[in-house]
Length: 86
Image: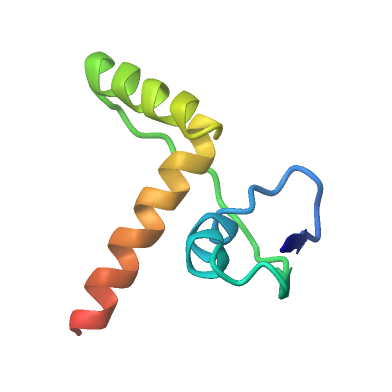
């Protein structure tokens, strides 16, 4: 199977691809094309305990992701779970 992702900007992390990869791994004959639409963004600053940040960096490295991509993944997963409960 070939997974292709089309991002509107080369620096935009493709987080959704990780979730899609698991569900399509058993279908090697299918090709998946992911289209992302550009969205406006805002920069935020948060304080994270140093030991937590080091742990996040370790997890990101084992997942072959940037720290920013991992944080966005975690935030997105939690947000979707909470929105589903509303």
